[in-house]
Structures are given as structure tokens and as C-alpha cells.
Image (cartoon, rainbow, N blue to C red; front, side, top):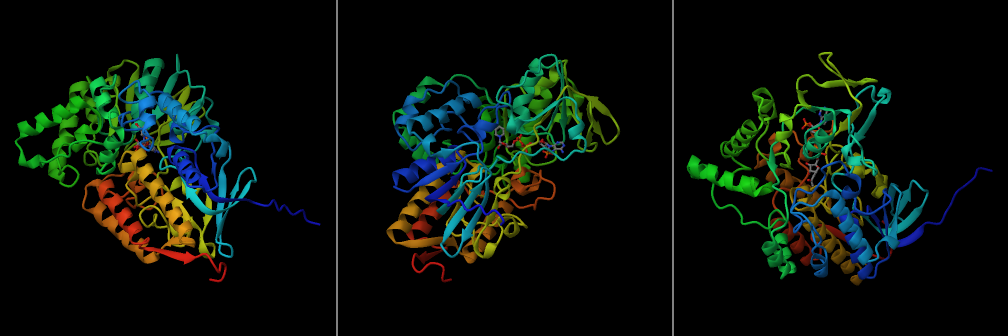
Length: 546
Ligand code: N01
């Protein structure tokens, strides 16, 4: 007789996938609202992106006082950030502190990956299965899988033959890597490369950086947090956070008022210089037309290029490091500490692989298209992520009529508000494609989504509604709007991960919503106030009759 395995699934109100900032806060909110929920997490600890990205130099590009939870008035008072831009270990300690404080780990299953989630129309429940053969039957399935969690190692032939060690920045060994005396190659010059290259260069005997696209990067000017500023926020952190939530980016800053082309070149440069000295993303917000007018944008681009030329001693290297292929800040602006200065070191070499790509990994190193070979003890892939959709595509998600999410999204992700997908009732995506997410302070956007989802689930319970599902009509209109807004900007001109350009074969669709968190949140609120306009709400009984 064939062996049949029929473990009865554990019955829950909700399964939450991922124990990063989103999954943990979602767990807390559901628990407080009286729903039963379990988080499933692949890692052996909490923290999501901050659990995996342990490469040297990893730190947040949003200031510590802003990049923390805002839902609990005590948390900002009891956590004393040590630097303006927190390091990965400090953020990981912080998220562990939050997990301890609210006793969250007891409802997290670690070292377990969700492999499939299937909607059963007969029962209106999600059957969620894992690689440990656990099974859950849940009314709601909430994907807190992160926007940058599916790391990408390019499919270079020969990687298996490499006799040295290789690492990806997004899955760094917990014990760290000692580069002392090693000959190292780094492929990739996005945020992860730009943060790790200066640190690796300090240790390695020799470092070769392979650059396909030069990136705009601004100094962090990291250091201690100004005590007066800190105390002024802590006097009423919830009020500060409210301002963040009502802003376009989830970051509190005075919005620019002027257009770059309406002021004299001297005034413009003065503004840029002032913001360069502040450091971080301040430069990106200098003028209101930088994201929409190419001539205005070019003034900022040239300002940064001149900074690079003034920093890097060798003019050929400096010119190679100057981004010229895309408008300023239309790829995620990098925030660095002595990135460009690193190229003045004797032990660092920059290799342009734009027109002479890496073609294979060899037993001793790598080979370029022109036949040039490089030997390394260690290769570091700082080659990024299958952003926004990658983590969801790895799970076999099937909605009504067995439709697969990957089939539905074959031509690019389609969602209503980045929260729900037509055909996938009771499935939610926290900071999903079609929401502001990666264009904002992620924690502010996460809290906005978690609060909305929790309120929604409470509404369904109160009104005895069995399922909520984005209508195809609302989804189509939202997708059209997301594309329309993106097309008004210069962002679509860059081959960025926002648009899926870094993953060979991925459809070219601008995935996040660029209309601003403030506009977006208002829309979400209005939709809820109107009884979840654009969503189909089905009464609980009778189930299984559709
Ligand atoms: O990844 P990326 P990342 N041959 O995709 C190159 C967040 N983050 O991990 O630009 C050669 O930006 C690729 O080249 P190109 C942040 O939002 C935040 O650095 O595609 N090169 C690019 O240079 C960030 O934007 C922090 O031409 C290849 C690089 O690899 C996002 O994560 C810190 C290649 C990948 O850059 C992703 O950053 C770190 C190939 N075959 C990350 N394939 C914070 O500070 C790819 N590349 C919070």
C-alpha cells in the first residue's frame, strides 16, 4: 500500500512569512488584536535583511533616529543609538531587543522556509507548507518577505570550479571573513559594494573592483548623533513620527521649494555644497525638479562627478567612477564612508566590465570577455537582489482556480496598492510591489502597511466577512496609475533594480509606487473608510459554493 502522509495542518488565523521588521510588528499587532498567528522564518534569528547582510561596512543609509520602530513610545526612549547611521550589528541588536521586549520569538518558527501557499476555495483557507514538512491552515497569509531578500549570484559558468572562497554580501557568514593577506575581487558597485569595498581594502593584500555601472554616492559624514537634535525628537517621538508618516519619503526633512534651473549656478552649487556637507540623502532633495527634469538633474549629476574628480587622484580612474549612463539618484543613491578615497590606495584597482564583461569564473579567479584573467583567494559578489518579487516567486503561491502567482506576474507584478493581488483572497503583501516601500524609510512604510492590514482583519472579523480580495478592475487601475506616475519621472531611464533590469529576463516594470507615502497613505485610508473600496468582500457563509 502506498504510504500516505496526512499530518493535520495546524489551524491559525494567520501565517506570517518572515521575521524581519515587518513580520515581527505584524505578529505583535495580530496578537494584540486577538488573532492567532505564527511567523515562519528561514534564518535562525530575527532581523530579516539585518540578519543576512553582515558584510563588512554594512550600515543603514537612513539615520538611526528615523530608522527605528515608531509604534511604541517607550522604544525610542530606551534604545540609545550610538551613531548617526547605525551599523548592521547594532540594528540586529535593536531588533532582538524588540523581540525580547514583546516576547515575540515564542510565535516564530526558525530555520524553516515556506515552500508553498495554496488557497483552498472550499474552505476559504490558505494551506501553507514548509521545507520541514510543517503544514498550516490559515485564514490569512501575510507575506513579510522583504523587498531585498532574494540575493543574486550571476550565473557565471565555472563558479563550482573556483578553488578559493566566495561570498555574496546578502548572505554573509555569521563568523565574518578575514581578508588579511588575501587577494580579493569584488563584483558590483551598488550600495553593498560601496559600503564593503573600503573595509575590504583596509584588510586585503590587494583588491580588484569590477564595475559595470558607476554609481552616484554621497558621503554619510557618520559620527555621534547630535545630542540636542536627539533630545528634541525624544521629547515627543510620536509627534515626530507622525510627521514622517505624513511626508513623501517617510523621512523628516523640509521639502525643497525651488527648481534647480530657477536659481543661478552659484546659488545651486551653494545649495548642493551645503547638502553634501550634511551628508546622506540630503543632496537628493535639493530641488523639486531633480527627479523630473533632465537638465535640472544634470546639474546635480555634474556636482557629484566633480566631487569624484576632486577626490580620486588618478584621472582615468576618476572618470571611470563618474556615473554618466543615467540621471542622478534614479538608482538608489548610495551613502558611503570614504568610498571614492579608497581608489587612492596602492592596493586597489578598478576594472571596467561594462563593455568587457566577466564571462566565467575559473579555478583560480575570473575571466573577462577579452580573455584577461585575474587570480583571487576570495571573490565577493555584491551583485544585488531579485528585488520586490524574488522572495515571493520562490514560494509556490496559488490562488483561486490554482492560478500561480508567478504566472499572473509573468509580465511584471500586478497588485492593488501593493497590498493585495486579484485572484489571491486573504493574501497580503507588506510593502509589496505597487507600494512606496523601497523609495521611503522602510520602517515607516512597514508600520503603515501592518496597521492597515490589522485594521482590515479586525473589520472583517467585526463584519463577519470571510474573504477580502482586490478586484481586477481596481488592480488594473492602480497598476496603470503606478506606471503613469513613474513615467512622469526620470527614474524609468535607469537600469535599476527598481525596474528589474539587474535580473536577466525579468520584465522591465517600475515596481515601487513613486507618488509619495503621503499621497499613498491617504488613498489607503480613503479605501478603508469607504468599506474597502476596490476590494471584493464575501460573507463568511456559505463557503465553498462559488
Ligand atoms: O545591489 P545593487 P546592492 N557583472 O543591485 C552589479 C539596499 N541596500 O546589494 O548597476 C558585473 O544596487 C550591478 O551592476 P549594474 C539599497 O536599497 C541598502 O548593492 O546592474 N556586475 C551593481 O553595480 C540598495 O539599492 C543598504 O550594471 C554586476 C551591483 O552588482 C539595494 O539594497 C546597504 C553583475 C549590484 O548593485 C541593493 O544594493 C546595502 C554582473 N553580471 C544595500 N550583476 C543600506 O545602506 C550585477 N552587477 C541600508
